[in-house]
Length: 113
Length: 114
Image (tube, rainbow over the protein chains, first blue to last red):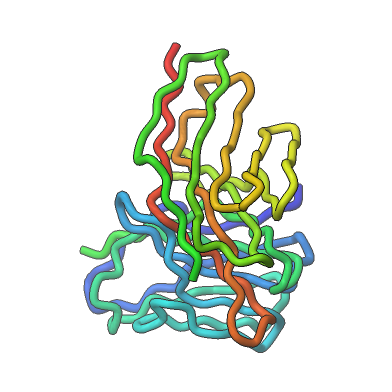
């Protein structure tokens, strides 16, 4: 099946630890995105990548880092510098950065204790 | 950036049409209107998008007013599985014109009742 996978579905970490969220797509899409969603809120863009080895900050990049070494993978690291990391994290991809339709993965819910 | 306004919640009877309104009075001429929905604790699902003309696909219809300041998403025969938060989004281009980002509001929580 073609699609976007995120793992794990739930993730628990202690405060002060870095954690990496996985996002993989087999849609052959060039562009990938990371969003954060807080309860009762819309999605906010953290980082996006148009092509391999390139990525740009979104609206709330502080405390996060990404890499794009392969076309199909766009992992997100939540660092200890992120003040309030507990949230629902969503990965998306689109055929090109200028291609509007973004398709989303199932999300990872991160809980920092 | 163009923003959208949606009612926070709506109800619909199962089997009836659900009409979800969206205002986007500051939309620019080259900006599309997108609709996504999100079922609780899942990733958003793309529904439909349009620029000027009305659009229809297997999921829904999108009616855009002639002045493009508002639109309506129509689910012709709502089912219980259509219960979700529906987001109306206007696509925004950055200065370079090479990227697009979606600005998400709070959406409309649609409850389909038996």
